[in-house]
Each structure stands twice: as C-alpha cells, then as structure tokens.
Image 1 (cartoon, rainbow, N blue to C red):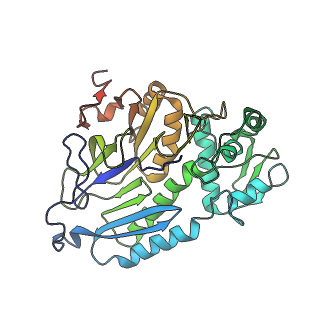
Image 2 (cartoon, helix red, strand yellow):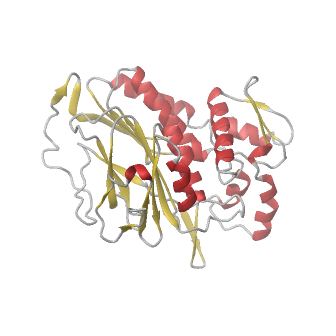
Image 3 (tube, rainbow, N blue to C red):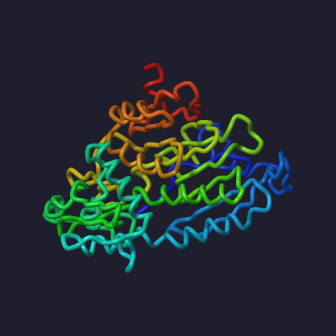
Length: 365
C-alpha cells in the first residue's frame, strides 16, 4: 500500500478553511463573483492555473492582472528542467553522473552544480544526516514508485558504504561532478523542487508579478504581500494523522516566504503489518525511527526551505530547534507522534493552535 499526501496548504482569498476543530475545506460564499481591483493592477481573485509538471500537480495563482505570459514562462521553465534532476531519465544530469561513478567526472548544467553544491553544504551542516548520495539506498526501496519494496538487510548493508557525500568531487570551474566510488548514486529529490520553486518565483518577479502563490506539489512559495489582508498570508499546518486540508493550527507570514513540510505520512509502503516511510536514515539504510511525525519549515526562499526540511526531520526535535533558532529568517513547527507541537522561538507568540487533539509542548520554554 502506498499513499502520497501534501503536507501543508494555503488559506487565502481563494482557499478558506473553517478553523473550528478539523472541519474540511469549504468554498467561500461569493467565490463565483467577479474579481475586484484593490490597488494598482492587483485583484481580489487571482489568475489561477494548475498543470501536471515536475511529476506532481503544480498550481500558480497570480494576483496581478494580465500576467498570462509570466505564467506561461514559469510553466515552460518547469517543463524544461523537470527531467534534468531525475535519477532514471536517459540524458539527465543525475543519471549521467551516476552512470559515470568511479570512472570519470561529468560536465553538467549550472542548475545541477548549484544543487550539488547546496547538498554538500547541508551535508556539512547536518553532520551527514542529510546526504545526497543516499541514492544507493533509496534505489533499493523505491518508496513512492510502483516498484516500491522492502529490500533485504544484506542488500542494505552492501549499499551503505556507498553513501558518503564527502566522496563527491565538485568542480565549479569546469562544471563537473564526480562520484569517487563505483555504485554511488546521487539523489537530488530533497532539493530539486525547492530550487525550481525559487526559479519560478524569480521568473514571475522578472515579468512584473508582485503578489502570487506558487504551489509545487505542497512546496509553497509566496511572492510579495497578500493583496487584501494587511496581516499577511495565513498558512495552515497539516494534521499528520488526517487527510489533506485538516489542520492543527495556523501561522501568518508576510512578504516573500517559502513553506515546506516533510512528514512520514507523505509516502510509505506496508508489508506484513509494518509501515515503512520514505525518509531514509543514511546511517542505517532503513526509514528513520524517531518521534517526529512532521516538520514544517518557514524560510526566506523555496530552495532554502526545501533543503532544510529533510535535514531538520533527521535532526529530531531538540537538535532541530537549536539549529533553526540560530538562523535568522527561519522558523520551524515540529509535530511528534504523541500529538505534541514544538515551535521555534519566533513562532511562540504568533502560532494559532486550533485543534484540541494537540498541545504546544514548549510554549513557555
């Protein structure tokens, strides 16, 4: 059995959630009415488009009038790069790197250079808990695909020595990447969607967009300010035990912000009554076993948010909170399996708890 779910959703003028208990999303009254101009070229109801790209559902909502061309350019860009970072697509940078592991460096695109560079940085910051060479292990499990399975312990032990981000040789001058050992495999899935989301926001800005939402399969990037609500954008945090659009609480944010969630409920398989989720521990080769159900990161941009979400999940609650509290501009919401919520320092006075099944565990700490 497999399930894939989005970890957060946006409450705005076009998606309103009744925040009493765990009620499901309802369409606001007047949704069918025509949009009103609120300031300059900003409108109350956005131009919204959803397409299947990046192997997920991507939705762009632009609150500026007459920005169809900007949205076209954003979706065109996503079409162009969606296969660059995949592991199994012939001709992709990642596949070429993996195929040449232990043999020779591979010249790659600027985009791939930036992703690999960031992966190494996060590997250093997390002391190896986030490792983009985890592909040797995730290729055995393949959770999230039709080929998902539980590999044997022997297979896992044989692959573990191939997981070490320090065996990546990155040559930024010549734009090459080399994996030192044959059988090593890059896996950039923990970075690529955030990187692309950041580029989409940049494209929209370059084409005159000042207020927008880019939702790349649950990786949400907010551009500018809310067109009508001076308080900002309201983000609902998904209840990890329930179906999508049921929340534990909400947080208001202003200006350019990215919100990314990692959770054990997103992708998993079951075998012999046991559940195996998709977040693999590079130290053991098995799904990470800790008390975290989900972690939601608030970051200045999509690339930063995506790159930290998995790392923070791996760090666990105590170390993750210490880590993020030392980074200005970043916040985090942890939810554990016992229905406790842990907030970084910058959220303790502003996070709104709405679900009585949950409690804030560190509100006064």
